[in-house]
Image (cartoon, rainbow, N blue to C red):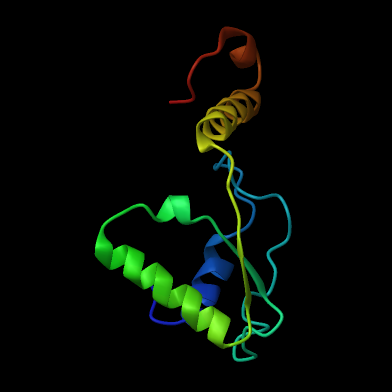
Length: 116
């Protein structure tokens, strides 16, 4: 998507934040993602769940290279285990649907109709 961390930070700063039409959008102010660009990774803690990297060789190698690049510039790499995402995604979907229905108002929440 981008060619540098600065490009990624600039792009994320534009697309992040609240959006009344997106039920999963964040509700908090968007931080300045570019504030620390160029200051290195020293002191940064990065959690990596390698089970999420079970893929073809090329992406695996790219992730391994990224981990090593972060480590060599001072980041602390910690192996973590993410929870199973299936329940999280199901809850997220239900929550987003309820928000859409509330936005429709009236008896939409009771009826459970779609917002098309």
